[in-house]
Length: 381
Image (cartoon, rainbow, N blue to C red; front, top):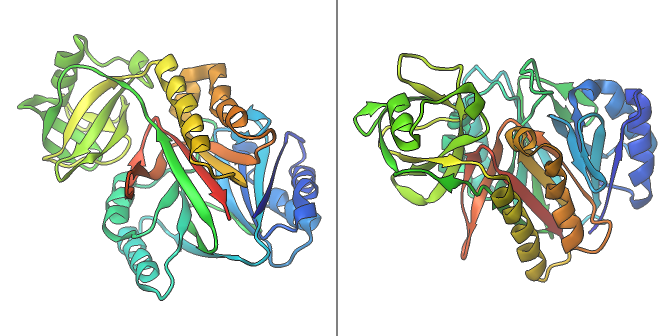
């Protein structure tokens, strides 16, 4: 497996695509992961990339984000790619669902069931979707039907919440969920960073519907958070306070949920990015920059110590982390650059939510939906 990454901030989307394509064309890529800030979410970017690479069978796959990641750093404005070639040892397959309000869950379940029951199951897949989707329903469906690891996230814009886009070959799409599955001789490793300092005690969710939690431990959700933290939830807590959600049937599958301060459905209710269910448990957590970045450093070292030399890496990291960490978000890229030989090809994006399983000693958990989380996918052959 060979990989090359590149980034550009050329103001002209077509010329930006050409620059990216020319930077990776020498390896004759089979697949190119493409990430960009929202200003580049136009077909011209993809046309320039295809024109410069010059392969009719090139697969381009990716999405818009709150900027992008690349080996050279973190960019608020621009586009980045990770190009891979395996000389035919790896096969890639794209599946697309459109119209995310029309029987979306059933169609996603059917797709995953088909992939899981085929004669050859993907080694892993990258999933991206428009952020205007019920992430809790995605998680529930992935938990039920996905038998192989899936990494990805919700596409994003520049935090204005106006729209997001998915890139599929030469097309820029919205209202879309897309899955890129990898088959054949490809190795990978997934790691997550979601360290947060716990506050108070875990609480039992008594009443919840979709992304709204109404009652915890016999009191309103707002009263519970105030009881555990000693103060009411404030607008300034966004990105600082989260909760760790624990499924009552799988306590080892903890994941973070961020508070949505403007999404209360009734007095005392609290909205979260991603669904919760009555019977689950949660604990309030507080973000700490040094704890979060220290965990990123540890992840990079642990990945290096596994002894595999990666060809490239994908990063999906919450836009909430980018907002909270400020310029220190660069350390999420720097950590990998220091852990591996100089010039490790990597690309990725700040997301509205992250999708990945949790690593464990015997493989991975179910694929889950996360907030305020740093996800790394290393790829090798």
